Image (cartoon, rainbow, N blue to C red; front, side, top):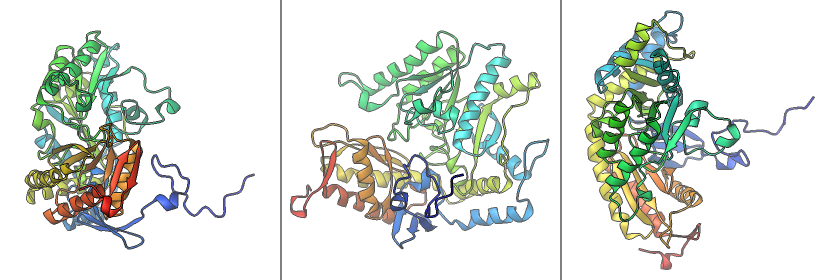
Length: 451
């Protein structure tokens, strides 16, 4: 019988990372307050990624911590199985319905964004089956999408490696071209290009077997791609015409991130299903939610059909208490307005960096921003180059995320102008000291640095 390795000091496996020399790669965070964190070596960082784009209210917020602590003393665990319920879960469901766009009237609480995507796919297929349309199983998604890493959510996520290795994947899933401005032909306006991309959904839907279309309103992991209003208006028209449910994944964009409670408000569209997580409780505890329309709910009510889904911690009382407290903080501290103001300032500071030849484009909406890079010959940077830029920025005390050919910044909505200045100054120092060419990133001497 094999024995355990005596010298394995780091048995914790991380998402995506190869575990070779893992202890040299991991930055072990031990403390955080607001937008700042500290690692085990005492190094300080501004977390310009907001954790995993989750920490709307900052780390260590006393109001949220107090709400969690009080709930732990009252009812530390509760399940929604077996006809049981708990007050925080019900209060949160009511709050989400009240603040969400029409026609959303029902809430199912999940443990994460990935689980919310899984459930949305199940709801879409169940809805049409109850309508007598067993043929409507197809799920359409964008070929630059990110919807999570569970089996179903991975299936509709384009930006995942190893999909083939995990296959066969979820059946009846179809990708269409994302409205990525990098793909827009030079002789075509971005609006026209986006509408052409939307029309690909119609080509699929005309066959009649597409149950739902899932999309992020703003494509975050692809580099903060912000489609024009005409794109989603066209998508909604197609969905209505061909009886396709519209699922909008606001896991990353909800709760003030884009300067609105929900990014759907920027486009004036009404989804049939809305997915939430991350900022729902500022990342303090695991929680997600699926909101769905009166029509979908009525179909299940008419058929007296329950929703065959659940896990042990759905509707967990302390998680829901954290969400209710987060909503209070966002309102009471005017964080949505602050997202607009701070996002505009952040954008203005980033615009100052256009003097560097590596910057192709700056994209932003609220406090969701990206800087898109190119190499010196105009080609897009490689993933390896973006990773190196991330590391160079971390060495200067700033944590950010790679997103396609860009660095993505999604800090807590409480970020100060001083902290924004520190982030941009650090990025400027990096850009001044590097050369991006031929798939490589070289550091140049001070005398040679491009300014």
